[in-house]
Structures are given as structure tokens and as C-alpha cells.
Amino acid sequence: MNGREVIGSCVPEMLVADADFPMSVVSVTIAATADGEISLKRGSVLAADDTDGTCSLLSGSEGTTAAYILAEPVMTSITEDVIGVAYETGKFITQSLIVADGYQLSVKDRNDLRNAGILMEGALM
Image (cartoon, rainbow, N blue to C red; front, side):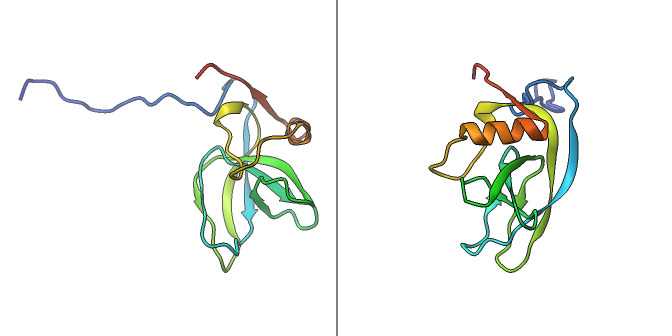
């Protein structure tokens, strides 16, 4: 033993671009996924269904609108909807946002998020 002890560590926050920008969180209903359980990570962009408001990972599907950023990881279910916590407003680093495989944020998605109170900013990473 050398007399040094690691008590904790600090991991840089790579999602939030500006902590001074007002951020609010809300509970969201995440729709059941027929393709099996999916682990959604913090920073996932959620699209709200235009008819019932349930959310899913943004993939560009018709009838959905980009609306939230997932604040805490959540595991979807194949049988029932689950509740998650998401940012309703805030300023986030664009490169840290997660969407469905093979999909990229479109201009419409960026506008929908901005209209909802979610701003994005590029960062050197």
C-alpha cells in the first residue's frame, strides 16, 4: 500500500451543452417494442406518436414527432408500455444524441425539437 486511496472519480458530462439553460424533466410513456426488449440509453431522442403521445426511439417513422431527450436509461418491454424520464427542455450536444440505427437527425427533427424547447449545439469531441 502506498498511502493513496481513490475515493471517487469525475466523469465529464457529454450530453448537456449548457447547464445554465432552463432544463425540465417529465415522465413519458415509452411504447412496447414488438422487436424485443431494447435498452435505450441516456441521450436517446424520443419521438412522440401524433395520436396517443406514446414515445419511441426516433427513426423517422410516419406519424411521430421528435419531442424529448431521454434523461435516464430505460429497458423497453415487448408486452407493455414503460415509464421513462425525459428532458422536455434543455440545450444538448448534438453529437451525443442517439437515434435509431441508420437514421440521422433531419432538418424537420431539429425544428420539431427546437419548437418543443430543446436546443442543440455542436462540440469538439
